[in-house]
Image (tube, rainbow over the protein chains, first blue to last red):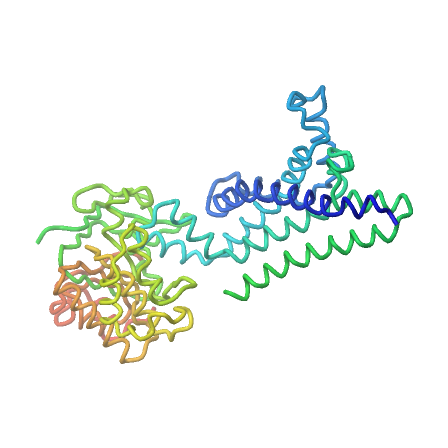
Length: 216
Length: 240
């Protein structure tokens, strides 16, 4: 058994939650309003933007990792930030992976709201912002599903965080990279424990969604 | 009587198909204007224009003498007008929350006003019930209360009692009549129910294929229609 793993287990879980939670908060703050505006807009470029977002949903995380790595490497355009092999780089990579999911699924949720609802809200004197807020509230099940889907996608992601975080013990080691390391070292029991923990976190996120759905 | 709306050469087209083509139409302050016509005659399009939900393809629309610009019309003007649609669109919330919605949009907290309206539409006892679980007639009364609580200067009604039972029809018509009489609210009622227009409207017009065939005071419209198409429509002989 790997005693050092158990000693650092809490740190790994907490770092996983911090990295994924921060990335999720960032892409929710940016992606939900953008998705809502796209869902409401009638711009000609919407089809193109939609196609780009849906393509983004299928982006291989390792490609995102490579892109962020090049961006943050010492000779890269953002190298001066010194973020490579830090949790900040992992947050950036995860936020990029999650953004198309949050924005795209929010857009789809807003588009699925009855057009008459929007007209009624405007007819009652809503401003543009109030209209967007009302639509997001109406589409909240879809929006929450988008956020949970993004959470599931990035908490279980390994390629990008491995590339830009480096899996440094006590610094950038998260659940997924720790599983990879333990498996490679033949430490299957700790790897399984970490895997169960990862599943548990994903399960709890889904329970939260179901509770929200039940409330509605 | 001052004019609330003036429409000049207004045309509305979708994908090249003209659905409304009005040379001139005026709505007078404090009146109930009934607009009758078969389905697809442009009645709902007219209401969307009057509620500034759409911008006319051609022509100009004036509200209290000011040029309106569809969705870009100023908030101050937009908030003087509201609509009740044929199929009430309610939020996933209680009856009370739905009724107070327009006030909340305006940053107004007025419990007494909401309570008064709920009593007026006979829904005080259901105020905490989920609005979407009500019957069709109750939902329409919620929609009417939600529109009236903001004290609009103009109330636009799009087939407000279609598919409702006689009790709800009578109740809604009485509320509309009272609102017009007591608060001077201008009402534009579009319906294919000629009897309802006869009961409520001061003036009535017939829309056919997007064009206003005839507009006159309700007694003349039904008693001695000037256009044979009006006579055919109100007698039920028109085939469309």
